[in-house]
Length: 235
Image (cartoon, rainbow, N blue to C red):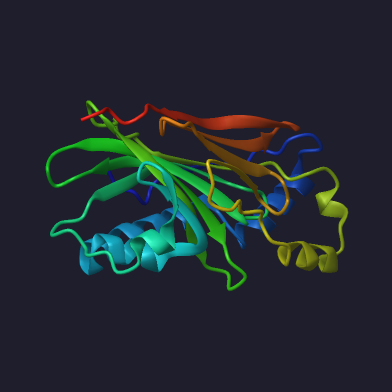
């Protein structure tokens, strides 16, 4: 499937119309589904060319968390870890981006060299430098591969009411706000600087976990990702 194809849903919520559409277009300069797809593809290419864990280190945010299956500080866990002889490969299928572009979520499929397959969910954070780094990465094995969509789909969260009446200085100030990234723990909630995308995770004592992602659409937060990973099987 050619990954350059992308259907972007930019429909405005309450107060929609030409003005809201212009507001959405302004946001594309700061973060769009296409931008996030490009980052995911660069991440996958780096894993192939530089090594799997090397790529994970290079693309990780300072506060990144991963599950092994317990939640860990990704940069600490990856430090000095040798790359496997052959990396996992993956392809994004769906992308969701906050209105301000400060956070994004991707979901897609992965394949290991041993033939096992599964899915992944990744949360991307736009740093002050303007680039994106992952802050949460998780997935699980599947009995059969995910069916690849005919067209990679993306959505941008609705902007809040009154955004288009703001002065240019107000927009610049908002771009300097930071997304909320939770510390590593058994539970955490993060949200974009403008509150239009949020995610949460919870790990149970038996190391099962749940992941949820919601974006603002039509004046309310709607869940777009809900993943439940069963506890690891005993030996």
